[in-house]
Image 1 (cartoon, rainbow, N blue to C red):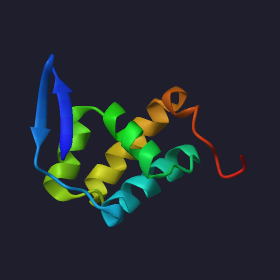
Image 2 (cartoon, one colour; image 1 turned 180 degrees about the vertical axis):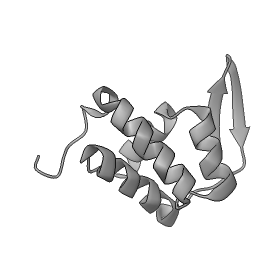
Image 3 (cartoon, one colour; image 1 turned 90 degrees about the vertical axis):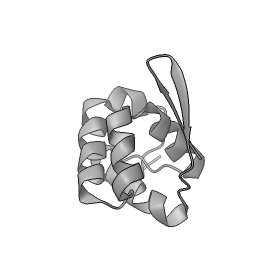
Image 4 (tube, rainbow, N blue to C red; image 1 turned 30 degrees about the vertical axis):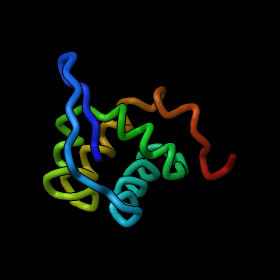
Length: 90
């Protein structure tokens, strides 16, 4: 299930993402930030994404180019939020 909080309302969608779905998301995060995230950390970052980016993944999938490009841009603009995660060199 996917959970959102938008304008103080909590929403739950019946959308299941599996490990294969998260590989596209993982690739976009690594390309933008050099951060190597495990599944739990990817979910943490997912929860930081704006709802418009999350909705792209729900509609088109996490391997979709539009979603991955949006994640890349968001990560580049929000590197400080990703500082706690390890890079490939750590």
